[in-house]
Length: 452
Image 1 (cartoon, rainbow, N blue to C red):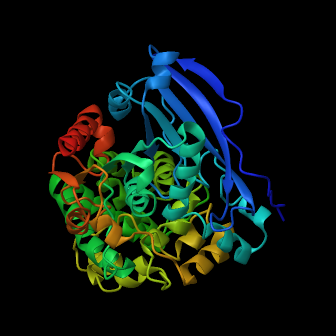
Image 2 (cartoon, rainbow, N blue to C red):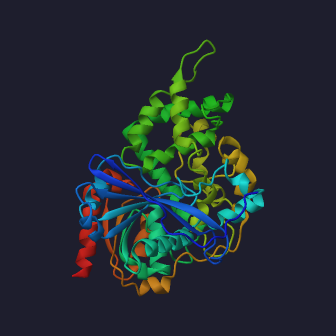
């Protein structure tokens, strides 16, 4: 079992600086408590990358305010920039940007099937991962902020799950914030909107999205039905060792939450079958592309912790998406094929059968089950404090967002004092990437309007 470090939390340590075209990059490492309620206990090491416009160096760089970017997820490392692009290009006009690998991701003490056994058995692994939610990420940010800039506040840009973290930041440590910018990440904060309510709202959105896709690409409905019939009669294994079952195939609907996702799904389905001596089989190109979409090798925490990001009422999540799916029989692919109806695909959901089908999750089966059964999840948001908020906050809400319910986001926007919104159907959930500079510029203007 891995031995715990109990040294005094360290500062950024030695900083390595490199240059890219138009960028100056600096690597930082920080030791922080695994459990912020036990600061003298075990430490884990976090990684963050500073990004500054190359022409801003020396004293000018030191005068720039900081913007910390919190990536979507959970379980996804921060962007790895190559030159100036999109939202980062706009941010670098006036900020030093810190790209934080949230705990367990990227280079921040990664947690996956290879590293988690160092913690011990499934019970030890699940206990360890219980410290990887938004409230811990906020405390990490606060330690990092104080080590970098002392008492000065900074601006946070939260994308998707990063926005959930930003709202938790407003709840638990608003003194560290100069402003908050949220892109597609206003979570449900009403205590009555539990994880089951989140998924009851999600399945109708999934149905709308896939039916709209079939209206755009009518031939795809027939291809998906053919795939369901094929997978019912044949065992297919993807290039990463994942078994492609019918429910796993339905997870390709995940693509429909991004601006180009419908087109990517269509082109993927075009390559589904190839003729062989044994009749039509799934093409190697198709299997490789599907593996890339479905794989959890790089982001296992997404499957292990996704439902826990909605848990703050003390109850177990107990595979909510799987349970609630039973309330929506239209998602029964076999019945849809038998009745010659369109097969509905799913979106941002996790299910217990994934622990058998997905190669990267099989070794973590028992850990995942323990996390699904875990009770006592603490509160992530302080609704009373949010109602008294004084930090300038701006959020873009994407109309009919596949991943984050629009109605829930609007209710949260009303519950956070002073929050300004931009509701748009111009972008899907990845608008901060697709809209880039323009989206961030709009959020910054909304914040400035609040300041007067």
